[in-house]
Each structure stands twice: as structure tokens, then as C-alpha cells.
Length: 103
Image 1: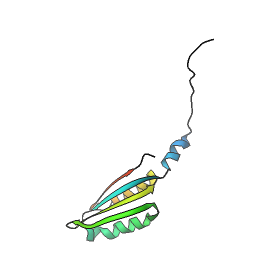
Image 2: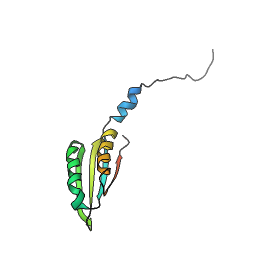
Image 3: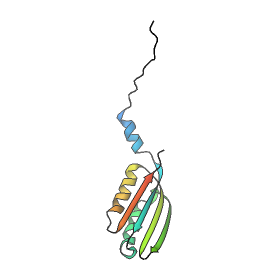
Image 4: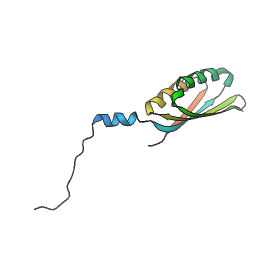
């Protein structure tokens, strides 16, 4: 009888990867608005469209000159976060950074 270690091969279906993409995780979104008067309305419209993702929102209007900052705490999938930040990032004069928890 041979002695040794048993090796097991575990096959993970493709749906495993897809399921991890659909898991909601806590995260943040930081938004810097260079010209509040010009862009705030569009930003608020997009945030309203994604209100179900937003757990908390804080803002500093005119944080420095006419520049404003909004921070969001979100519960979203990577796809949902990408759609939200993509829409915001396409607005002229807006900078967006985001992150999601690993679990």
C-alpha cells in the first residue's frame, strides 16, 4: 500500500464568479464638484436615481471656493457601483473615487 497525500480536484462552476459579482458589499464614493452652480443639479439627479444604494450622505458645499465635496456610504454590487460612478465620472468638472469592502 502506498502512503501519501490525497489530492482533490474541486471544480467551481462559472456561476460562482458571477455570484461574487452580484454580492452587495459596503463601500464609499467620494465626489468632488469643481463648479457647484454648474454641476450640482446633474449630480443630485444621478444620486436620486441610485438612492436605493446609498446608506449615508454627507456634503460640504463650497468647501473651498466654489468646490464642493460629497461622500457616500453605499451597499452595492461591483456592477451597481460601476454604473453609478461611471455616470458621475462622465460629468464635466466632477472627480469620483470609490471602493468596496472585500467581503
